[in-house]
Image 1 (cartoon, one colour):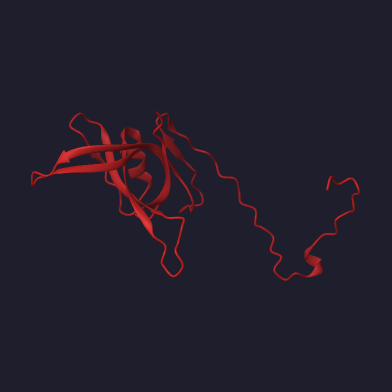
Image 2 (cartoon, rainbow, N blue to C red):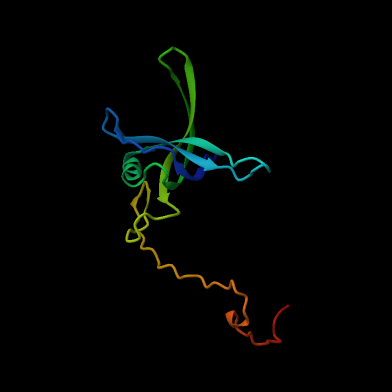
Length: 154
């Protein structure tokens, strides 16, 4: 059997770190994931997905992510049932994330990119981004002359 989920979206609220009675750290939060298909004349829609993180992964999320942060995560889809205060049974579908990482924009350019999985923190220095040349004018001076090569395979 296979149960893996990979998502990238934005947190809709600040995550809050909680501790169970047995001392385990846990956080639950919701992310908004844009749908890839947009009907013409309509606005883009998003799905709101509940996420749960445990132990060091929960601590990592609460320390480095806040409302609006772009997050990538990997985990397992889980369903559970509980009884609400009014006595009705409720079903919950959520992703239990075991690997989370930063994506997209960085708030502080001096930071390292980090991700966290069950094996621990993984800092990785960012390579400096080289500016992409712009050829908007279309002038001949924007382009290099390519040598003719009769040995091309096409």
